[in-house]
Structures are given as structure tokens and as C-alpha cells.
Image (cartoon, rainbow, N blue to C red; front, side):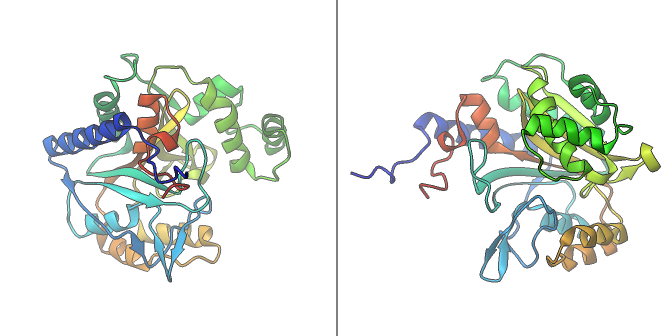
Length: 307
């Protein structure tokens, strides 16, 4: 008899998810951050070449609520958050499912440094009862993390050296550019070496990896005002001091799009004025996986193979 109808998540996992959702909503209610909803179906896909959107009858299932939430910010919403399902084609594995739960929020008038402090407070609220966390978080710049855990003097290292180190880690030549090899080194060498039981914040990424973040500095000193937070080698959240310049955003979209449509409604909203703000996206399923010591299939009610 087939058992595909059975949920992958245990009653314990289902109950923990409900508890986490309640804690999140209570946290933001206390901070007077408003919960919002935005459409899951969008006219334009994300332009990030590392993310593959799912086409749905001429529209796209959103890979993040970011673009729509920024339109709300431009319209004067103030501080907002959203807890929702998002979708990414081809992401299936022990830590990935094409449909997953994301928490995203924006703080008006904040920069990424202020947001990092709030991310730490929320993570400690959610995790402390289930995982031992050292009382002090570790904050490193991207350059410090590469130097300390991979022996790389960034940004002065030559691309040929990066490629050699990346091939040794990956076990093959993947024909990547400089940023691609940096990603291999981060995922294969730096992330596994990060201290255990510690919230680790890595910030000031290369300007070439800014995505939708502001860039400060010039030339080789330019850095993206962006951060990621890790626990026990698992990335939990990715945040930005958000780019507010519509012209610069258009240029980045064009550079990345590679034939994809560009979200003109977001750009039109930004031309009217995106307020200074910081935003972050956090993976809820990964939090649950860490809490329970489980695979992603074991924290989802029905994973991709059972849906």
C-alpha cells in the first residue's frame, strides 16, 4: 500500500512550526511592525541569475516578496513584514525544497548594522529553548572571514589563485568567474569552519555581490552593505541596507537580466521614492531543521515529492 499520502513532518514538527509562527507575529506586534500580504503570482521574474523562477501561465510564482514589499514601502507603508510561501525552480535537496517558507521584513530609517542587531534578537527568541547558543554573536567582515577560515587575502588575491583553490575544494573545474569561485570557497571551506553554537554575522560583501544593497567605498575598497547570518554552518538570513536609487537599480537589473523581463512597476515606485531602509529574508524551514536536527522533508507537512 502506498504511503505517499502521509505527511513528512511529525506532530512535533507541525506543532513547533505553529509555535515559531506565533512567536514571530508576537515579536513584530510588540515592535509595531505591520504584517502585510502580497501576490504570489507576479508579472516579472527576479533578475538574479542564481535564482530560477517558476513560470505559471505567463506569470511567475514569486521567489521572494521583496519587489512587492518595496512597492508598499514606496507608498508609505512604514515598517512591514511578511511570512509566506515562496517558490524556486530546481531547488530540491536535504536543505532545499522548491516551495518553502520565508520571513521577510523592512525597517524604515535603519541601516544593515541596526538590522543585524534585531535579527540576532529574533533568532535568540526562536532558538534558545531548542539549541544552545553562546551568549555573544561573532561579527566578521567578508574579508576577515576569508582570511581567517580560508587563508585568502581578499580583495588582493588573483583570480587564478581563487580558481586553483576552488577546484581543489569542488573536485573539478566548474568554469566560474571570480565571484563564482568565491562562492565555492565560502560554501565548501568557510561555512563549515565557522564556530559552532554561535550566531555568525558576515557583512561587507564584495561590491560585485551587492544584489539590491547599497555600495560604499570606491575601487578595490568598495563593499556591499549586506550581511548573512549563519548557525552551525547553515545560512539562515540575508539582509541589505537597501539600494534606493532607481537609476542604479535599473542598471543592475539590465546587467543581470539575461533576457528576463524587468519589474518596471518596482522601478516606477522607486522613482517616486523608496525610503531609506534595511531589509532581510530569513528561511523558516532551516530554523526548524536546526531546532529538530532534521532534514527539510521532516519539517514540511508535505515536501515536493509528496505534495
